[in-house]
Amino acid sequence: MVRLGKFSIAVKIFGVCDFSHLAVTDCTLFANFARIFLAEIRNRRLQAEALQHLIQLLPPANRDTLEALVTFLGEVARHANDRRLPATGEWLPGNRMDSSNLATLFAPNILHQHSAGGANRDELSAERVEERADSINVVRAIIDNSHHLFEVRIRSAPITGTTVYSVFSFR
Image (cartoon, rainbow, N blue to C red; front, side):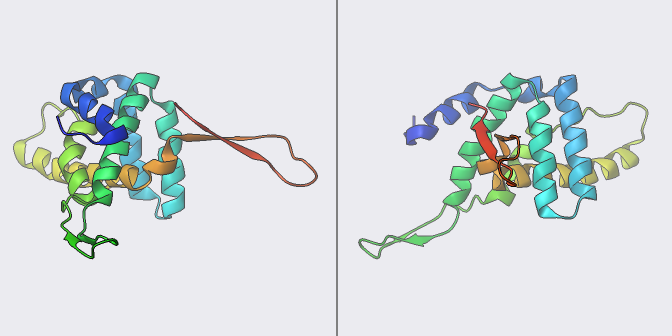
């Protein structure tokens, strides 16, 4: 097994995870709403907020699995580019797996859609191409914003004219 420090748990989860459990009703709704929100909302900050609210609605087991996976994928994406080691000046090659490449690979498994019966093959494939592109955009946005998507902000009562926010992690 490859040792990745604090991310070795994500490798274990990935190794045994069957993403078919994400097809339950709550997660199918998540996938549909996430695609719709990212297609309709153009403001990146509002997209991130919409995704954060959708993630909060997932069942805890699915949310925790998604958090472990995208935290790991975010770490992989951070090592996509070549970089120079400061101590020696030696170039360390990147893994070439940025968030777009990772999203292309993982989106069909994370946000899969059951095919509708009765549609002809051409209509179905044209719809699937669009759904896949939307799914890739959703997963890329989740990976890119994973550092704050799994936090919950609770607004408390105003104190002397200011609003105090508390940030809690789902963990």
